[in-house]
Image (tube, rainbow, N blue to C red; front, top):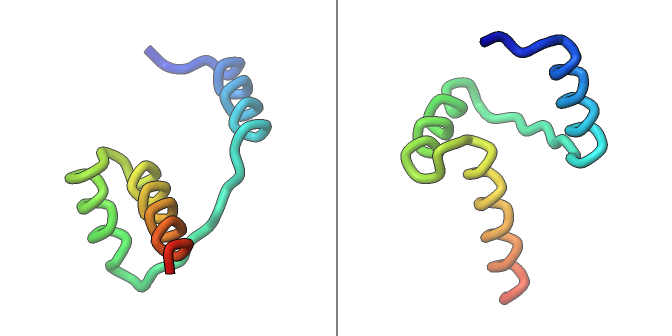
Length: 63
């Protein structure tokens, strides 16, 4: 069942109010490798990137 225009607007408004966006650039071809790895271990690219950032930040604190 297609999502209505009203539902799309509501989702976009919610996301705008509750999330920040970060753009990340990678070398050509790396996006596919990262995405496949993410699907295998975390299910989504977003979950994988969030986990990677959190783990790195925690590791850096313990230096």
